[in-house]
Amino acid sequence: MRKAKKYNGLFVLLFLSIISGCSVDEAPYDQAVADDLLNTQTGLEAATAGNYEMMKAWVPDWHILHEFAGDNVSVSGTTTDNLFYVYTYQRLPNNARATSYWTNSYKIIVGANKVIDAVEKQESTTNNQLLAENYYLRAFIHFQLVDIFGRPYNQGRDNLGVPLKLDTDAFSHPNRSTVGEVYDQIENDLLKAADLFTVEKENVFASKEACWALLSRLYLYEDVYDKARDYADRVITSGKYNLLATEELSGYTTLQPERNKETIFAIKFKPNIDYADNGWGTIGSLYATILGSGWGEMYASRPYLELLREYPEDVRNGFIEPVVENESVLWAIYVDDQSMYRWKTVTKQGDDYLYMENGNQTTLDKTPDGHGGYHYFISINGQARRVLIEKQLAVRNGFPKYYILKCSGQEGQAHLWSPVVSRLAEMYLNRAEANAKLGNDAKALEDVNIIRTRAGIPAAGLYNTGNLQNKSVLAVVLQERRLELAYEGHRKMDVFRTKQNLSRHFPGAHLLGSNPIMEVNYQDKAAVEYIPESQILLQEGLTQNP
Image (cartoon, rainbow, N blue to C red; front, side, top):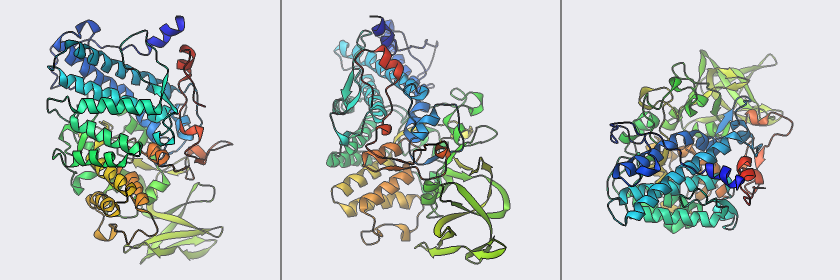
């Protein structure tokens, strides 16, 4: 009994107090209520608002667990924050990040269950909107949990997933359901929710289209490609959303989320109210120093940079800021055979770059890039190494600083950020991937080209079935997905669910130590986080991941 009590505490919703006179319109979701008010309309609305509010504390761990375990981020030094073990794939059973993610996730789920239970007991359609929103929240959080603590669906429905918490009973402590059972429940909740919405709200609240968007992703992960395509198409053809214009794209995260016509659902953070200590401690502060705020110690990875730099016209380059230290000096930056950064000072002469080597002037090798420019290389120990030409950059611990700006800058505040859960660009890419898997190559490339055209890539950089340069259509789609959705919580799952191995052969602090993990096989046990050890100890019968 003692163990059950401790476990139950993790499932208890910690309601916030009601602030008198709060306007739901002015403060979209910053309140919650005690259980005894759930039989009132005001209480149900406040409880739903509180469920959205709780997602704010959940966001940092969600982002770290999904993004730092990918290959788009390069950490420039060690840290005592447990995010380092996520980044290095040195799993800890008591990782504080995974533990708080687990705990906060179930708080949100139980909060949603409380509203669902209270509304369904009314046996009335009056509160179908609130019912729909909470079904969506429960589905979304379960989906994000099984991403981290379970294997991808297409590696086996019968693998263990996460506990499905579907009630409000303080003494109910479910063990792990299978991945298939969790996915089935997510699907059921989203389908049910999509039919219940009665009110058109702003994109910081769940909606019918947000359900469709998540269903499209769910079916993509399940390899049910016709449904993934069809639900993406529903969102695209709904007429509610538009891709931002090319000139607006690099400022995506600076916009107030409600005014962003591309966003389907975002977790709303409000200026000043959700912005303490000038942004120190936010996700954006890890990636960049802006207006004197932020550590700026986690940078864009070298492979992502090379992919992004393929087209200088690509406005997505604006999401990455090389931190220039000297405007008058040029560097040719490359990676050596130990996967460490190195650079040479160069001078430009026409299309060539010259550098000094052992007292001799040497020219960088170059090859046409296929669209009017060149790729440059340096020979190291007989091997050609790709170089990126930069103005002299600021360096930390041997790592040139490439700030990531995709989690910063909302409404003029350095690191305010409202994370996007779903947006229209993802729908085009979901549809493209589904069509590629279904053999509809031309349709898949058409959607990829919509995204590339919007990014400012010229016509010569668009794809057709005759210019793929030995790449498959699927590889083209996945590459564009990496470019477009970087730092939005997709990359780790996109690698492992498509049965690719994750290469870590790039500069970063993950190379430190005596046994660095240079590659993670998609079937490796390290690809799945441990269930928090504290939960294993408190709950009899809860099985740990290998």
